[in-house]
View 1 (tube, helix red, strand yellow):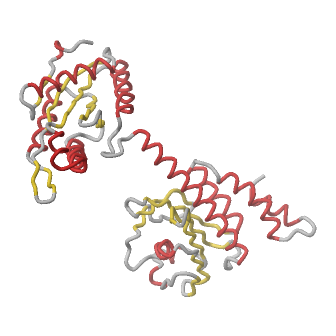
View 2 (cartoon, one colour):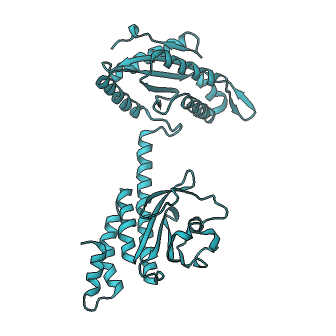
View 3 (cartoon, helix red, strand yellow):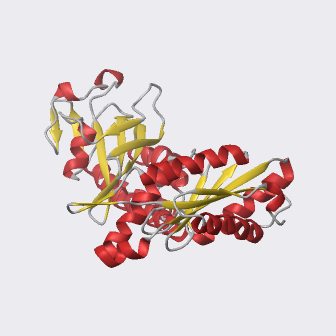
Length: 359
């Protein structure tokens, strides 16, 4: 039975009041919201909660804390609305003002708000709405905003009641907690796959990705190239500037390597001072050019430590492999190329030709 039918059925029961009727519907919805599926949460926000309080229109935005931008997750508006909303607006829109205050914003009339002070001219899309009432609900998790739920167009043309507001207040906390849990889960998943210092993939994930790329090469044909890079003379840097200096060198070089590759390429921190890059569908010649670019960029950009310019360099090995290779042999062969580069004088590239590679 749909939510609106449940509500009508409950209200028809003898002695049933609105609040008690809604409680029977709220409880299962609250259980459904407690999940790690943002699409399921969005469906409840756009389909079920509006029916519960008699709202026709709804939109759910999720906050990207890194960019301070709200991204539209789902809506049921018959007209276009913003896909992204920056929290750095000045003057702020009603939604941005609500996020900044972390308070529920209730608009009974565009010139009469309960919550952050909003001028009529700030409600850019006011002409799209038939009624002047809306509720803007920042979604809160551990006192931090993680998104916004907007509800508008009361079905009877009136304003949202205190009971409506109480329902929204309850759900904004529940939804906020669930979205916060999703963010935490995704963060833990990323941390399990990435290196904490550089943000690159870690050693284990590199091998998983390499095996997947080799299987793809075997199935569809083609070859992939591997670059292995090692920081030259990292120990003297640690000795002279401490491990913080060494960490800075590792981070700077990791950013430079990432700047030299394509989005489809995969970079990883292979070990303490070693990096590995997978370049799908890349010839050995092109991979060698990428490696030369890496060596040049690192060499021409010294690390700034306090008032010192600390020269940096890397040695790089390059190899190319087909689907018949196994991940362990690929890593071993390219690592041998890297060792050859270091033996030849460091700060250079050594390329393993195909006939040198044992598969």
